Image (cartoon, rainbow, N blue to C red):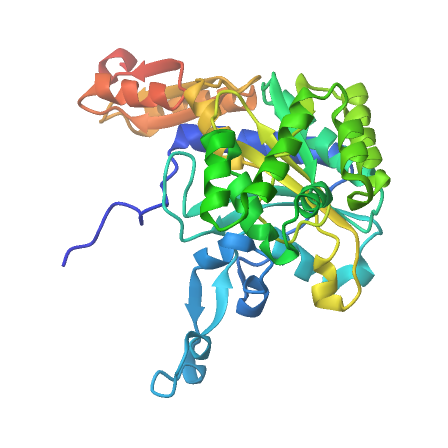
Length: 419
């Protein structure tokens, strides 16, 4: 059997032009988030399987790339179940590793702690456009801040970054898990059925109200509960003041402070934003992770018919490691989808250095070659990116390939001309 040159399904090779854009985007992210006081950290790609399988990662826990035990710990003959064979896995997101990191190092960190993480994660998912099995995530998180200042800072930092990358007219959709639960409780759903209800509700943008109604009824919920539940969403869409409608309708099912907090976040962001976007309340927004406890948000960019990032508050997760709950909130940019959009738009890196290719004919050597190298060095000292290479027989194809890599100028050196 021969060697395989294609990458593993769901993973990809990154060509030079895309790599330049990726590195530029990362530089903008680091600079912008740094200006908001976030500290860059790094966590291992491999995590303890207990942490990854703690029932906090939702559907992602079904997509873990698991790692076999090694050496004497791997005993195939005596293994009775998967747990006897596996002790680690590749991280499926950056949040679980961050919480473990904070729990292990909190005495050495500031309070509240503002973290920035950029790195690869892995999910054994079905690959499709903008969705890979290995992909980059870019997260900012604030741990130890209980007030809505955390949400405001996270949203402003993320949207400022998107604005600097040239995105405008997008939406930040926002909701609160406590509102989702209050609406479900008001409608008569039992608490143990909330997750099933929310999974169906999360499809609202694709299957519309009629589809959600049909799936809820097919799941065995009574027509009375389903009608009462969907009536809330119709009431919200018709209401002049959505928050006031919810507070009045849900009554004791929803604490007044939840709606007040959500309004404060939206008003503060709208008044102080540095990018062109709208923040809108979306009562159908669910977010898949079961670790969210309060506010949740998502990026919707018109050019991409799917979420381009999201996050929320997860105040109970640190306590899983330390025994003491700590307020925490995070926001993740959909890095790969942002890159995909920029590539499709033919994005040009602003202020990019001029790129010149010096094409040297074979046979040029010695003193003549040294003069060419010195000329290239002088160009580099002046801030130009110069690639020095031998001229191929098919010069036209060579130049076409270099143009795809961003070279705009070509200087050819022929042996005859140097005599």
